Image (cartoon, rainbow, N blue to C red; front, side, top):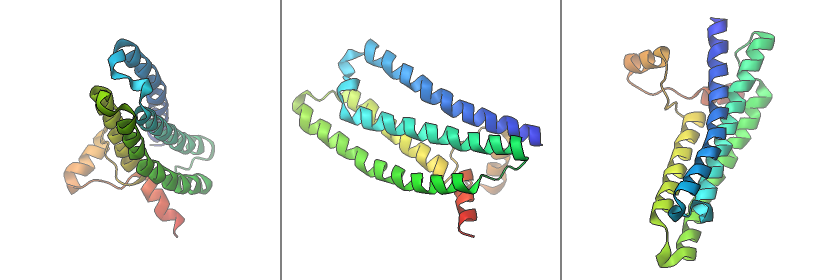
Amino acid sequence: MRKSLEKRFSFLFSGELTAAVMFIFVSMMVDRAYPGLHLYSLLSFWASFLFLEFLLVQGSYYWFSKWRRLKKENLSVTPKKVVELFWNLKRLNLVLIILTPFAFAADFMRWNSALPIDGLSLSCFIYLFAVLEYINYFHIQLSYDNRSDLEYLRRTKRLKKSSLNRDFTLLKK
């Protein structure tokens, strides 16, 4: 079981980090292939994109810390200082969720009638994806990608609390 859990944590932290790196290259390719989107000129793109990247790095660090502790100490419980860090990051992420729409408003004011709607739409999609990632990490597990998770979903007919959310309840004790 330990090896299976170790493999799962490794898959999760490396997957989150890989996604963060790949999204950088994808954004560069999209900006180059579709200059009419004006992605790199949109404040809303940068606010949404950087927020998403920040969340992916957080997710990678969270799973890495669990993996490292399991490997070194044979414990799958998240270290308390890591949970405390994420409790503070949760607040910072909420601030970013609230502030990002102001970047969209700034784009509306700056671009006026020449607003690149397709670029703005893509920025909005990235923002919504980031908000879903935040929910997935800090509140409710939205990703069900293994047999155990799918079985839980089928059996209980409800979504699980996220792993990090369960860790937060340990802080309160």
